[in-house]
Image (cartoon, rainbow, N blue to C red):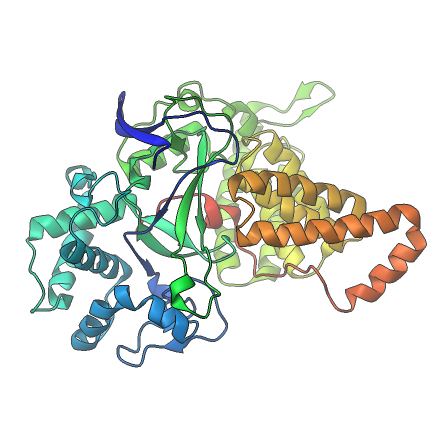
Length: 489
């Protein structure tokens, strides 16, 4: 933590500032979680120690709840699971993720004190809980969680007051950080990272946060490294400059971002992009044909229609009804494309959703065309080193490769690699996968430029073994990365 210092940020309370100059891709600091748990819905599909997704997991023989990759992961996670294991066995079942995370935090603080590492810059007691600003529904949920916690908490452990527990639940509710799987594409759990909680929000931040799983493949637990967050610089940061991250997706317009931040994090955003409504006109723009703009009334009408339709599309996507998703996207696009600009966020969401579904269904030509439109739109909206832009460019590059457009595919994969080297770093699994793709497409592109006929013949033969396929079940970009911090639904 030698590169940062705590200071009083005007209008924001405490914050972190840089104590030296940094550049794009620099790791400002890394931090292991104080405690972390797997989501309730994924308890049987995700390792409770390394948070990796595995097809076959071994279950804890005592509590029958925790699952692990193997005995090595089980031993590595035993320090955190030991007290939890006995509590679940006595309680008869596992409580929800908020209760489990709070319990793990309390057990660790009881054992190690308020500062559990030499690099921890703040205590849990000092973090904001926003209890007094919460709506009644959230307060009622916390009361229920406290009641369940007291039933779950072992009688022979140190007892805590309701006020102390209320504070920790409030901290978890406001500051819990979403833990992703090893590829960084799916949220699988939630953890508390005290130093990260000091980093304030800005809609156009100078830093980004990723989860790096470190080394989890070693047979000996001595060489296992805890999953940790990394705060990475997106560009040049001067000495004394405040460090910021974005709590919400910049793809939302200013009004929606401010509403989300107020509801979820209890503050009014006054950043320059919100005050000036920067790029809102681009995000909600109508089409312009031969210098003639579509009337604003028509743009608003179609925008409202798209917003409602996207909600229906998302429900069908979540239920796995991909045929219905395709039909609804096509119908909505017929109405939207003649009216909305290619940077309109609802049109971009339609293209993004349909491109991922079509890639999953292996309609690669259609997926490539749609994904290219998404990347072109994102380039006009996002910061050049935004992770969403990098991931969208990566998907588009792979879609173009699958469609046989090696020149475009290789170029996009190279661009995506440049972005993810900044946002994720060279050791992140997704960057390493992308580097392998880049090397393969570079080799194929050289072959293509030398002899197209030979290239296409070899490619057709290679496709029978399906290299470089990315056929994971489609999830929206918003589900994957729009919220850095976990919020209870």
